[in-house]
Image 1 (cartoon, rainbow, N blue to C red):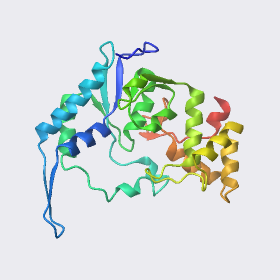
Image 2 (image 1 turned 60 degrees about the vertical axis):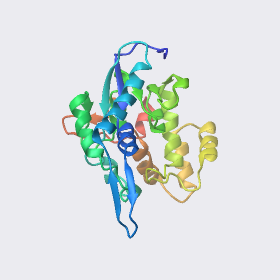
Image 3 (image 1 turned 180 degrees about the vertical axis):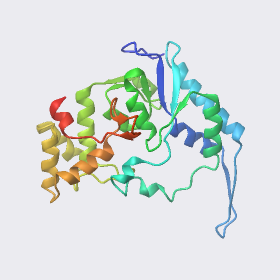
Length: 253
């Protein structure tokens, strides 16, 4: 059982995109008939069972009854309006054949959330003050709050304070994420980024790193905005759009 560091609202905020993909893929049987002919068989009932078992394991890891809220990515992604290459490398990857069908089944069964243009990560971030974030995604370490990685149950619940979260956001702005299609600052890897922020953990230091590579603050700002996972208050529900991150937030908060 996991010992909770605080006593939040009884919510488990689950990044459900990942178990949905894994459950859908796990039941596929693929036959390659050559000549670019492939047959795929998958059982929706079996996929549902795999998904249910994953959710059940997460919920039972906690010592009290928490309400799971499954967060899914919505249609579209606002980050692509900031940077066209964002996750463009995933467009050609085959999705599991049961992905859409399994999501429909899951949405009938569980309490689920999604918002157009936002990723599941963003929903976890927006709701982070109301419960425990459940995700294997390192991006959630840019959010202040409690985070549980179901792939590393031995680590328990990690409490991330604002200083850590801000550092992690600036770090991601420097190193980028090629998996997600944003490059960060040229020729700045994990070690160099750590050295830069150890000397000066500030937006100004990030901008100077970009300028040293022949770029400017606008280039750094684009990377920072796609790296940013939304936090509480960073979405305008009336206009139905995110509030883009500004460096002023690190200067005033």
